[in-house]
Image (tube, rainbow, N blue to C red; front, side):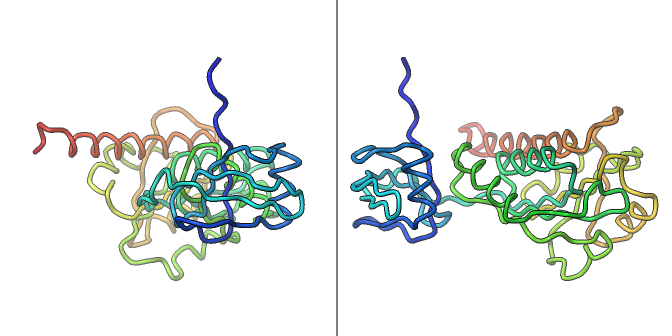
Length: 253
């Protein structure tokens, strides 16, 4: 039988090449009572800054679990500078979007309130926990930040210079997404996706007038909102991976 993978846990403390750490009460409870890890068992620890560390549980105390850092197994490496702005959906589908965005490398997740948004109540703490769990499961070295909701009319305020906003236009007005990404894949990007029923006409007009925006199209079919998010991010990752592979191959030297 294949070996069971070691569990992974993000912690809010520095990880250095020597020493012992003590988890807080919540993380101790999670590790000991939920994950049922006994003393002398191993796991991977991460904090989003110091890479991945293999560690050993010294004392499986459910209130203050002590852990010995053994060795660094991966150094912290740069991750894609990609944001996702999405219209919140019903609870489970919003969780799905956050989970898949995390797995596909998004660095910031911003709920956006539109005219047709299905819900305006967004539990940011719960979504941040969903992102944490997805990062642990997908073996990411960092957790994307989930921000407070933003009204779509306010996107232009304090938008960072040099970041392109790609809005998915279900009317077919934009170029195919793959073609749109080809020239800008290595620059800071953001995607904005609409709710079920799509953006209102006035919202599309407003997005089109933003100096940092570009329209893109995902093809002839009408996609559910969460499908559109996953498809767009998967296309971006596929193009980025292909370009990296070509650049690193001996024939490109």
